[in-house]
Image 1: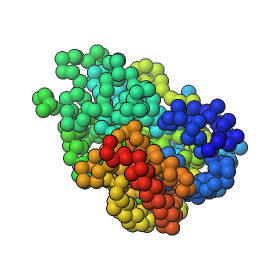
Image 2: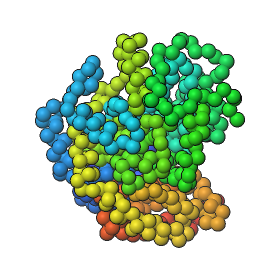
Image 3: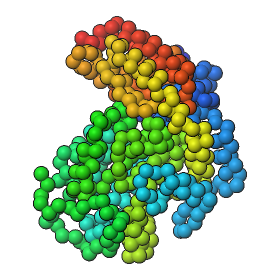
Length: 224
Length: 235
C-alpha cells in the first residue's frame, strides 16, 4: 500500500527504535493521533485496542482528563525547575513522600531521573559509590540474569541479555563492562571482590548497625 | 522479567536466592520499572513475588506514562554512605537535567492519587480471572507453545512444533507477522522474538479484554494460515 502523506513525512524525518529501518518504507509507520481509554486512533481515524499500555506504561490508558489537567496546571504554575544545588519544589517533595509511604522497603530518600534506564544506570553508580565509601573499591560486579532487560544506556544495556540491544551499545572490551548478562546467581564468586587486592583507600563510611542489620559480613571462606 | 519476553520466576525462586545473596553480602536491586504501581495486582512486583530487595528502580506507570519520570528508592544505609562521601568529596556529583521534572512529579502524585481513589489495584484483581481465562484458551492454538503471566502482564510464545517446542527460524519473524495481522484487525500488542507480550492499560474492562483476545485469536489464525502457505514448519 502506498504511504500516506504523514507516513512519508515520518519515514523521511524520524529514527524509529527497535524497528527494521531497512524495511520502514515498505511496512509503513503507524502514525497515531489521539487516544481514549484503552483505544488509540491513527491519522486515518482507524481505532485500535491498545493491549500493551504503550510500552508497559500507560496504566490509566489514554486521555485521562483528570491526570492531564494536573499536568496542565503544573505547567502553568512552574513548568520547570531542577533539584541541583539544593533547589526543591513541591511536586518532587510530595511524590517522594508518597513513594516512601508506598514502598514495601525502608526508603530514606528518593533520587529522581527521567526514565527506567536512567534509574538502573544510577543503581549501578550508587552500588559502586556505596562500596567505595565502605573501602571496597573492587566490589563492582553486577549480576543480572539470562533474558534480563534493564535498559538501553551503555551500562544498563550491559545488564540486558537481548542481542539486538547489546549489539549496539555494550562496551564489552573495558574492565568496567564485562558481560554480566550471562553471569548467573549460581556463581556468586564472580560478584565478590578479589581477596588479593586490599582496599585502595580506607573506608570513609561504615553502615550503622541498624541500617543493614539483616545482612551478614562476607564469609571468610571462599565461595563454592 | 518483562522486555526479555515476560519470564515469570517459578514459585519460591526469590525465597531461594535471597539467603545466598545475604550470605555473600550481595546487594539486591529490584527493577520495578514494569511491575511497579499495580501491574501484578499489588503496588509492587516485590510484594507479589516474595522479594525483599535493598533498593528499587521505578518509572513507567509511576506517571501512567503521561510524562517521562524515573526514580531510585534509596535505603537508609545507602543514604548514609552518600552523606559520608559528600563530607569527604564535597557534594553528591550525580543527577539529570530533567530528574524530578515538576511536570513528571505532579503527574506522578496525581496518578498515584487516582490509583488509590479509583481502586485500580482492586480493578486489576477483579479482571484477572477473565485475563487468565482468555490466556488459557490461547494454549489450545496450534502456534502457541507456552503462555506465561503474572498479574496483568503476559507472554505468549509461538513455536513451530508443540510437542518439542521447536522454535521457528528467527528470520521468519513469525511473531512480527502476527503483529502485522493483528494491527490490520484493529489491535496493538508487541513481539519480543517469538513471544507476544500483552500488558494492557490497567483500567481495561472484561468486555475490552474479550475484544483484545478475540482479535488476537483471529490474528493467530491468520498467522497459522501464512505459516502453512510459506511452509515455515518444515524449515
